[in-house]
Image 1 (tube, rainbow, N blue to C red):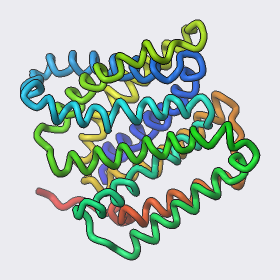
Image 2 (image 1 turned 180 degrees about the vertical axis):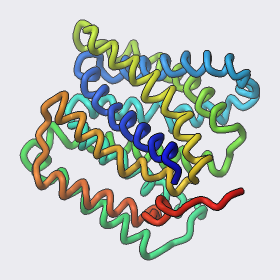
Image 3 (image 1 turned 90 degrees about the horizontal axis):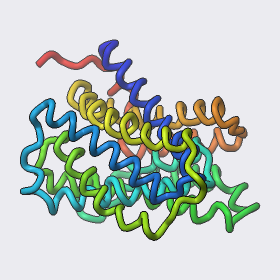
Image 4 (image 1 turned 90 degrees about the vertical axis):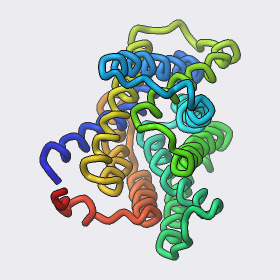
Length: 295
């Protein structure tokens, strides 16, 4: 891997790891609806300006059904669920549960006949499930009423990403940038009614508003094109490394800025989940360090 690609990978991991920190800052004050809509709308506006600059805004209306579906499963639903969970769970817990998305994508692909059953990948799914149990066993046993729904919500968000992944594979009609741009606008419309159902929890602070804008522009608008650039330059397998690096940065940001404690049990649970995810996705470290052949 070229040095520039490695730096992009680390930058993307730091950005997406930071998204959970920003959600933890904004969600307790603004609530799930305003965090999700603020994030999506600011990202949509950012990509709209970028699309005008790059003259890449065609074909969105013709593919509105595809973009509406992607906007729901890949943006509106998971963003809302993670915003809800962020009021309770730590940044490290949120990021590790998000890292199970490739497992759900594989399981859904199996159910739809898009993937083949593989014993090693199946073992990875079981391992990751055991890691989730290990990570949350203590808090769920002590306060099930407080933690159960946020954990289920986070796993459901990851499951929604899995649906979107398989849907995109089977129905891809636009380039990645146009898909990201159009699906964000679709999600903005889908989330709009939620603003009337879930009001702001507290008077917005400058910090919470900056966090939402940062979620939209940096963690979504900047991160999406960066991720697609990595897929193009180093391949999907190597780009998948971001899944395993996100929790590292999320844990670091949470400890530095929110003084979140990390116990040995949490670290072990995180390690088991990430190891299971690596098995389930077929990820190999060799894919990352192997040099690309010249075209």
